Length: 419
Image (cartoon, rainbow, N blue to C red):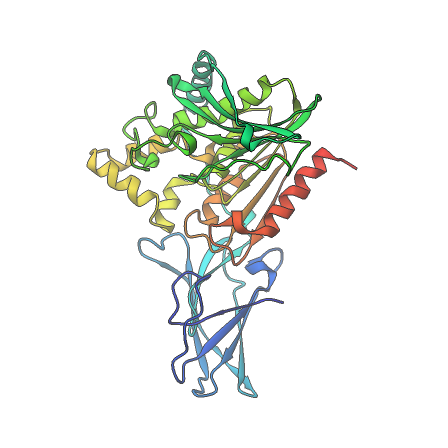
């Protein structure tokens, strides 16, 4: 059993380093039980261990906040005091959290920093808020995209290639004639190969695949317009670009780029059209959802810590990006109701009921950028086969979690090499 050690002087984030203890200060150790996710039947008990040999405290105060409302007026879901049971200078407390409704919560215990837990996340209700013309809007967008000649341009990068796979820099014209593309890695020998499309995170640095790493696979790292290999000198504020109108909003073009990436790989002779997989973290996780939602050519998808979901609740849980979006709307004098109506056309939760392929989502329970609630708002709309993977101590950096990389590889391999 792992234990999570934090102190009152450390940073608010759960993953911050433990601060030095002041004389007489309590220290609390919270074992990671149930992945800090409680499922199924109650009772639900949160256990903690208290070490304060210099100051004997009989009671430890506990306050649990609903994540909806953390940026505005925090909603207390449970407030109690737990009696410490001391033995040999060590104390234990047990907190009954059975009364909590499905959702995610911030736990505040005397002697430790706030951290997040989840209660039956698949029962979270965050209904879609599609506008009446939502499907028509996206059908027309895809038709408009189809009318744009992609003019695929591939530039071989000999110094990045080897005897197994060639690496190319790719440029493609997408919606509105705007450039997107990425780095493409393809086996040299003849044959049909599975394809892994990887969508990049918000402002992430592009990288080139090791041509020796997956020699029997085609890989495509996708840079959407203005990002990645197409990053210009403009500010990295894609979330507010064109915010005044659903037709001009940045993510209309970016979501079209997601689909154009699939157009590109299927144009390649070595692509096996029945084995196209999508993956990505953060913004790339959102794009992975979009790929699986809008394009039936995706055979399976693994979104990690996905972005751009459940905008109304997003604004109530964390400050970015919604704080930035709300400020821009105010500057442009866009009424809040109109703003959320525009955003609803790009809210990932309004797409995911379209998905037909299997889904494997991962999330960090302590994520301060893409809160788990917003991710389950997306996940819970999916009607196809699905599963999720929780890393309880992870914030947003799922790409650093080797356990997720291993799980995702094994999951994709189950389609590549079925038993």
